[in-house]
Length: 171
Image 1 (spheres, rainbow, N blue to C red):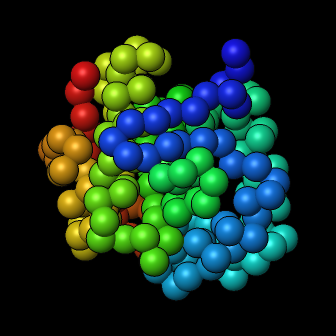
Image 2: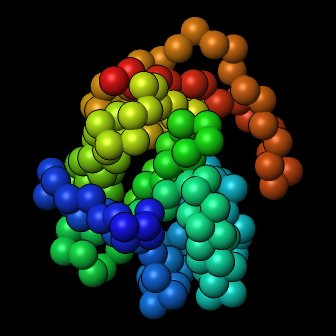
């Protein structure tokens, strides 16, 4: 079984790998001002950007560097994404605006966190979150991530410089 065959289910979510058929749904989910502001995804996030993103996902998964999952409740309609960087033990997540406030992100993050600890034997997982990203902080806290005392990482992306605080989840 290859990493691209992995599907995770639990907590009323099903995490599955993205397919080329998901490109239009990715545009709907990720072509928003808040996703553009908070993530390194390109903006506008049009069909060409979605197809390039899918190619990058295929490369990094084939290379054993990352896992990218579409967050679904039925195995079909993507509602967001959760990704795990296997090299840095870090994860990221985002939901389409229509799907926020339902606990979906926390359930997906809990599921991939348990998979990382139990199946992939990763002793610690990290999330880097801006101090004013209250929704992402709430997700991390709900799943049991703890704020570290590490100095913030300073990042410049898309002409914006900001700080990221590091959160950790120990097995």
